[in-house]
Length: 308
Image (tube, rainbow, N blue to C red; front, side, top):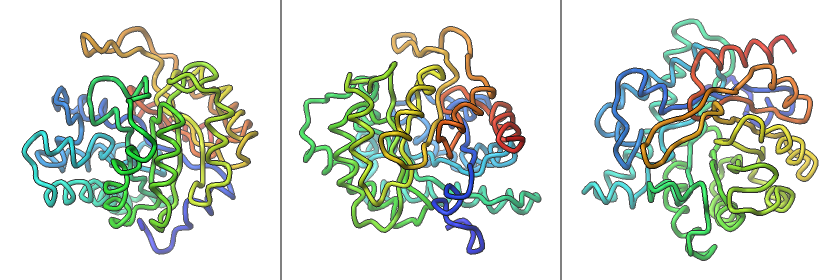
């Protein structure tokens, strides 16, 4: 855990809100790092781990309470494609948690006194494929096969003792079911967040059906959405709160659109700190940003929540 004196994240959510960080990739790219590799930010776990710590620290200093680790695309299979054996891959996956924890220590040394937590990211199966399929889902795998894919990485992340497991950017209910099975018995709480389009998952299932899967999961302390358009978060937050009765997690993208062919962002940002008040009123207790949402926006989110 990040601090023996801090409340658990679940305790904090019962009492109020916590601010999530923003996009790891855009923060690393703004520092000059090339993430065009299939491993994305996970490549820097091996090559430039200090850069990841610096990115986490920037968000803690901006006002975030929670750092989401750089393990979204860190998988045994993905590392194997680069010739990294299973033992070393496990070390790198665990390192992602330690880097975030080290950033929390540095933040405290710089005078940050609010509670800080580490969320260990577990991205969807499609993230490992690095072909954009995490935004479509329906990989042609069974729930059992997806569970077997996720469980080993989750075991490594859980053993590194993060404060919470972030089961994030989930595109469909099959993968959500697999992840919910995979976290059972690990001894670390989790949140489950879908990537959505309108009032449905990216694979097209109604959000009521998707959120309901986590309603009775004791391991899950929050349910919601991430890596979606800010406008799509409005309905999703209210739906998640109504269906599950759990605290809601919400961290959308900037609103720009990702062009997979040119590997570039198009359009303009529509992420607005003013939306934060509405999300909070609808049940959101973990609020931040995902792709293209940087430290300045997180500072505004923190100010808005503090004022509220």
